[in-house]
Length: 98
Image (tube, rainbow, N blue to C red; front, side):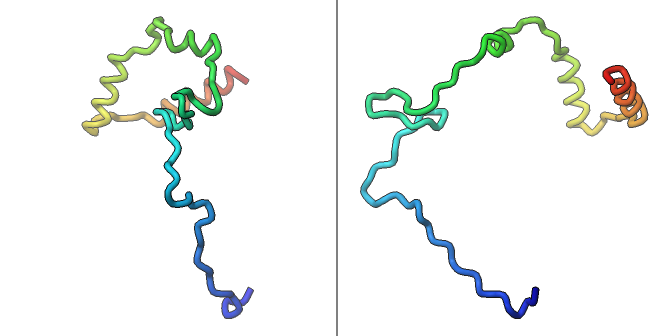
């Protein structure tokens, strides 16, 4: 490819412009187009039973106090990480699950 033989770039023109005077379609909070009667127009999503169960899960398997403590240390710049310990744990997990 020779740089002297390149052609000049052309300006990009918009082809999807909405005609002047037409009102923009109404959308709901999720960005879905809404019909004139207020009903959503488009794809409807139903969550699976498992997903609904996750949303209402109260098992408290995450230690939120520990997470808050780690976030505070990160924000303060006081969190020290032992990369050897992390790498060893990752390798151990790989061998356990292989």
